[in-house]
Image (tube, rainbow, N blue to C red):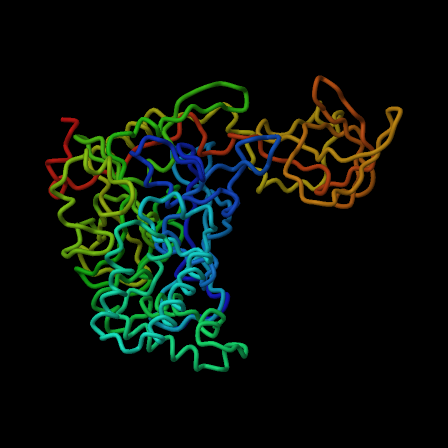
Length: 555
């Protein structure tokens, strides 16, 4: 279908905060490096900061869904890539629910349309110039490379025109050498149109003659270089346009699954059929990010608000496939599939390998060993289909069987689970409704929940120990600990006298500090549910009957 400006592409997705990787930091160990292609800086999804004193330190985030499947071409992007989220525990409480901390609280991350996109057109994002250059063998589609490719094409065109008596076979051979046979890697040559010289030459003439899209210039070369639709970009657009019939035969439907609150009590969100899905339908499709034998990096050292240290596996484990006889971890990214909950008795889908080769699925990988997967970190080569085991009705919740090992681990967790010590008083800041900030005297009688504290922006002027708040001209993520001494005015419009805790044990008393702009009630770092020491962690079990023997290295 055609998409118009501001449309949401497919349905909003979950956002999973990560601790085991750093955004834009690429370690030397190749196992796990593939992950770096599929994570964002956490601020794009509004993920909480890992620091009390710097609110702009969220760590990376994984948003599995349609956003992960979109290629980046900076000056041709037609969508705003995944952004934003809503903090929502979906009624699950650490006071009473063993599932507290077992799923991400961030939902509703959207991919939206920049301008009209016609049906059958490829979606392009703009991930920034830092994202692409480090990736091995990646074709760079940065603006400078495309511009340089256009200049090269223009120069070739000019030379070909000057030597028009050359045989066409020679012209084609020279062009093939530049685009396919050049012996040294060149990011500019990689961006050249992958077509015959005859096709390229004809396209140049077509673009150069389109006077509605370019200024008046003299030579054909200048016309091409200044054209609104450059030849390199024009061929990329063409390669990303498919007939609807081609998509129906070769594509994978991405909107069979719609997220909603699960029908399983205290299970958070779930996946629901957007339409009737007959038995055998590929309800979902997901490429798999593989990590062969480095799962120990997902064991993260945590520190709670009291400084207590403990080890906990990263949350993404709960959204990944594993096998009891293998160290391999496979994490799916497909529209809606990470919302599918476990129910052994009501399972209506199961994962299977696709029945043909795809861009993100190479059947020969199923016969490779884990050493091959460990050292293959420049591309995806494994995918799964989520196939309907029976007819599924529109609006029906979609379930799969996570496996006997998962079932046992969950039941053991439920039987041994106890609420954390602060469970009765805990309130996330998003649920805090009190408008006024409490003074130190009020806190002595009625303290905040242990996960909340007041933090201030350090912005004031004065002398001789008398200081007054001044407005911040630029957004500032830095904060200092502070305490309210006095409150003036009504709750929402109140100003405060606060005591700032500065470096080296120094304090400063600041008057007329406004709520919101100068002082906020915030969650302490690492205090949210997914950091809980007793939060459930376990991989989804990959079906043994289709799991290759060559991957079973932990028997």
